[in-house]
Structure formats: C-alpha cells, structure tokens
Length: 65
Image: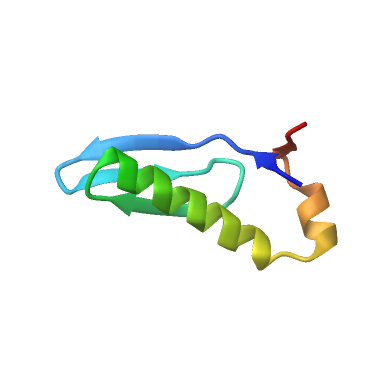
C-alpha cells in the first residue's frame, strides 16, 4: 500500500530541514532540497516499519489509490 503524507521543508543556514506533521518526530535534513526530500522519504518509510499494523491504521496519512 502506498501512503501519502504532508511534508514541510524549510531552508536555513545549514541546508534544508524537513518534517512530516502527521508523524510525530518524523524529521530529517539535507544539504540541498533534493537530499532533504530523499531523506524525509526514507525517514517516513522507516517510521512506518517501526509501527504495528494497528498503529499504522490509526495514523492520518492517507492511502493512495
């Protein structure tokens, strides 16, 4: 199942910072925008791997069709 989640990316003096508001604590960074996006995608995937099936089903990121 593919899921969609919102991601916020901000630029600061160190590069880019990204986080997913729907997934508490799911965040990453990168030297450039492409790296930050790749890193947050990986962080989201790893976040879901740590959850039980029940926890996954109660989260707000929606399944993509």
